[in-house]
Amino acid sequence: MKLKQLIYGIATFVPGVNQYRAKGTGGTDSARYCYSVWLRHLVMAKNNGLNVYPKVVAELGPGDSLGIGLAALISGCDKYFSFDVVEHSNSERNIGIFDELVALFRNRAAIPGDDEFPNVKPYLNEYDFPADILDENRLHDALEESRIKKIRDVISHPQLNNSIVQYKVPWYDAGILEKESVDMIYSQAVLEHVDDLLDTYKSMYLWLKLTGFISHQIDFKSHGTANEWNGHWVYSDFIWMLIRGKRPYLLNREPHSTHLSILKEEGFKILCDKKIKSESRFTIDDLAPRFSKSIDEEDITTSGAFIQAVKIN
Ligand SMILES: C[S@@+](CC[C@H](N)C(=O)[O-])C[C@H]1O[C@@H](n2cnc3c(N)ncnc32)[C@H](O)[C@@H]1O
Image (cartoon, rainbow, N blue to C red; front, top):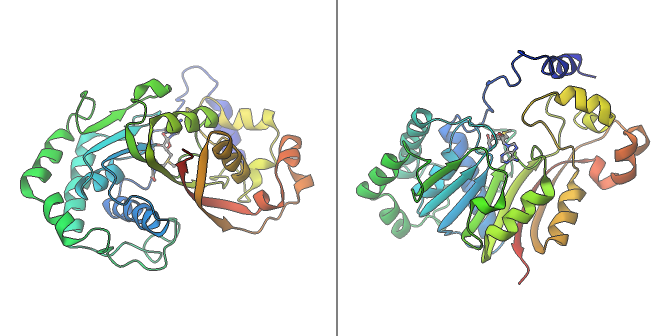
């Protein structure tokens, strides 16, 4: 057990003790990370026969900056919605990241790969600039000076209604977005943190156009709450409640199979389920009773997955 995590979680129950350490989430504070993540989702969309020119995109859990969505806008999307439960991002950082992203697209920079970001998934077969997706015609229009200036100007006011960039924090209700209005909904390292997974998938289903798709990289690991990558499944619900404390989010501890079941029940057709396999030092009997009943041999060795899915019409 990671005692430090337990002590921190318990401490958050004490009135006056800071319930959330604003350390940042890591990841989207780097423009190269945002560029890499956006292009990986696009390349995977192409590989799976999906629309690589989504006009309206929505992101769950952007974290430290809106950079992944800004990369989407720079590469030609018209509108970007972003939903989080904690306001990690701010205009100053977003503008800095935006300027770096524009330079990366102008230079047709290769996708930062495993040497630079060894932990970022999905892994691709190759990391060349995807000129087949972002061809010269598309980039000529997308990178046009007045278009780039317009996006840069609105980044300072992402809360304004009808702005092409919308950042809603906190969000808890599907009504925050019009039904069937989005071409692509994506997240990176977020769905493992979402408390109400079922309602979140239901919201995505409502928001998605009939022709749209979802694209999610999910990390099932213990995020430092245990010594083993899957040690969070050993903790009882009581111990987990103490570790979580009053943090606004931690981990929902749902394994890969839960995502697949919800997707199927809610009417999605899975087009891609790229799993990351890791060895388990635990057997299923070592897990807390709740998990030893629900987690199977496949789940206990699945530490991550990249999922793309469409609505069944
Ligand atoms: C590990 S960070 C990932 C941030 C970013 N996507 C990245 O790749 O660096 C997890 C993010 O999920 C957000 N989050 C947690 N619960 C959420 C929810 N129910 N809806 C949307 N975002 C949520 C957190 O606030 C945080 O921004």
